[in-house]
Image 1 (cartoon, rainbow, N blue to C red):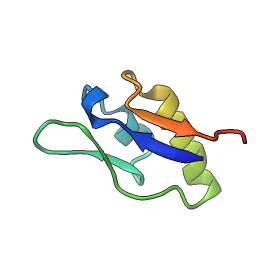
Image 2 (image 1 turned 45 degrees about the horizontal axis):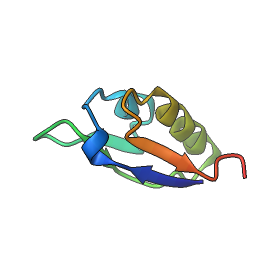
Image 3 (image 1 turned 180 degrees about the vertical axis):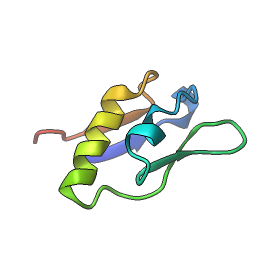
Image 4 (image 1 turned 135 degrees about the vertical axis):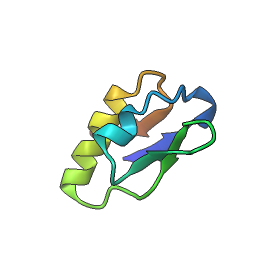
Length: 67
């Protein structure tokens, strides 16, 4: 799975940070997504998938999911 973040699409909904706080945060200036870490464990990968699914703007995406 390859994570892509398109900050221009981010609307600052914060679902990523709420769903996967070890992996995502929001910047203080605009509230846009910030990647904190790669998903290293199975639990983090599951949280990553949930965060991608919960993102209202499609700003975070996964390529190769299920490959």
